[in-house]
Length: 101
Figure (cartoon, rainbow, N blue to C red):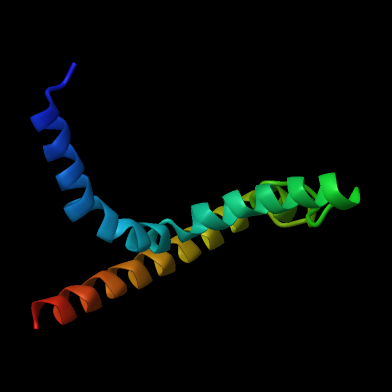
């Protein structure tokens, strides 16, 4: 068991270091967020209306069933993931510059 002082220190580190980075992490992991949302949307839509939004979830399988080659899907997802990482780094840098002023 951890001491109360150690718990307070862990909570302080979490508050100061991790929580401000959550929006940036969501942006950088944007592709994973989209894939996860595709599953949530598919399940929610099917349970509420009985109809599917995508041919199959997660999203990459929808593209497979739409006739896309697997290599094409992987390369395009790499590109999208890279764009999200660049956007996340840009947001992080902009926050850092504004915070330093």
